[in-house]
Length: 404
Image (cartoon, rainbow, N blue to C red; front, side, top):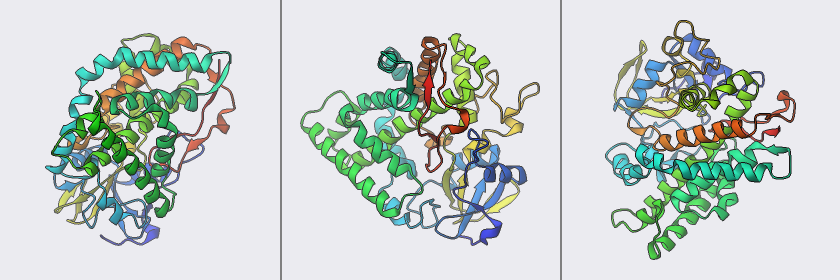
């Protein structure tokens, strides 16, 4: 991996700005304003390329000359010392085809648009019941703990076949695994805990299968227990953490823009509004890692074979050439009338988020129902006191005190 003096490279991961909590870290936006590709310093030493332009990110995520295989010796990692362990336990997100396709195909059917559309009444019921519990006998709540987190957690538990009563365990483990400031030892310990839990759960389901994803995987003869556990780990963490943080961030942003909340009263406008929120808030602020398998000309720069690249979804989704149509607001602003359908909040190419139809449905239902049922919803503390999760690979909020 090419070495670059630390003084010349963007540090990874970069720090967020308290003044602009809904924006990517300033170091990334400054890099994007300079060039579509710049050098970035990795936590464990050495450097990689930082891709910030829309066209460049799209190419990196769709061109097979860039590998997602975490076992490659030059694959860029954001936790110092974690390369070997990541290579030992890669999910299909960190594998190339045909291994990636083989494992992903096992669960694709559970997340197809048609299947998710059939789940909408059930998701609506989960959202309504969460709001019933949150509002019963009180006028204040923490929207993260009482709504944003329980809704997607219950949905993914039902899909996977994970007991909802174990949610505090897996939510705590998830937060540990996503915390980019934890020691390597703590991360490995947490990963082992969750994998052991899932292996034991899969063993039970092999004996008594039910109508859920883990049961369907458990009874297959072409998957090892470890492959099932790592797939379950990915789906469990991604299935609740990402959507929970999007619900909370979206609500916090909209409460500061009450005139735009009215759009959620129109069912026809809700899908487009959610796409704009996904574009603007793109919560994978640390980017998507890849490694070049051969020399590639990209954005006027030659990325050499064996060099790592971090594709920054958050800056790509604010590219003015793509999303800054005439008459529209700056791409740094929320504009619910913007055509944001080309955003890459869910990634791009063969590795794009498997659960995006489910995430869209949950966001559309949760936000529209929240604002319909609580028209007087507002922050319960000054905006400056809101606590954001700046130490995680998935950006979000620690809490969101609200009143109505």
